[in-house]
Image (cartoon, rainbow, N blue to C red; front, side, top):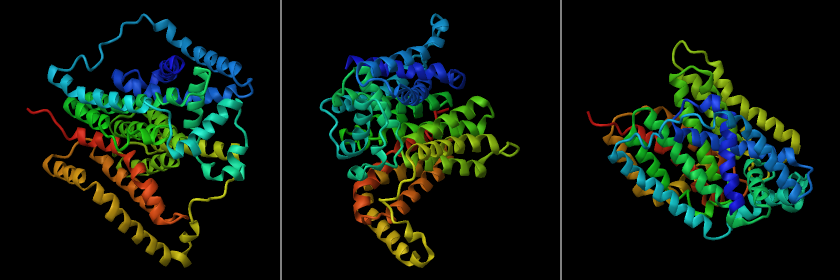
Length: 431
């Protein structure tokens, strides 16, 4: 646990050392979230840079030394005067409203660290890859092409496995319970990003409420999701959404850099992260302010995921699709596909929506009772992402019912923290 704790301190520091020009103007809570996201990508790259070292001590030492080198740019400003965190500049009432978020994160941390990571997808996908990378200090080709482990989703990005391997290298051993500490930290960063963004936009009450909603959203922040990629992906979604809103109102290289960082983080975490970045790029073309150039934000959103996809394909080669039946997209099979879309919608309505009827009704009442907010422009983007999830389920090679039952609710839950930003932005201080 000490080794993992040191890694989780060094990771955002290393991220801040690289991302400081893009995030230094933000509130401290937002800086923490962006620094963690950049730091996780940095640690993944350092694992790749350490490949070839002898498994064990040499691999751990190489990773630690490379991280320390990244921290050197922070040393000259170590004694610089730091402004008080925005939390301390809030009034007493707003501070009290932040307490539920902290309690929710603490409860999730207790639950996450109470036992080793055990969920099926962790054992079969994310943990399998991470443990193989750590124990071999390499990225073996069998992770992508061994028919014996074809069920491990070899097409998935590798950010989460590489980060788990990095934490294990800092700890100098593989310990499922200690590695789980990454997930409460991602939850805290997600809540901090939403809180800092809304406070910066003059919505202190909304920031506290959004952070509390994220802290207590246990359908996502649950031990069954520890060890998988959905919790880090939720952080990426929130970062991309707040950067997208900044880009609609500000024209600066720092904003575009944050768009690129968020897009790359999402794409490197899960395939639906790359989809979200592509949809955001398309929405920018629709929503961009008059007189603004379309190209910098569009390229910042699209290029990182494209480059990441090209590099990933170059590293692993071509992989056949196993999970989806893309022949349904052929015009001759459109009738069958429409039938499966109807089956998907019926299954989601009767099972998923029925189970979430009460919170969805409360959300509808809230939107009816409040005025539009600055983040409402995110709703079409989130809605279109949801629509693509429905279409994806209809293409399942193993049956609509199976994919909806095992994955739909979980991947939709990763969008809820971004929706919390929309909810918080609708809460305005009374005048």
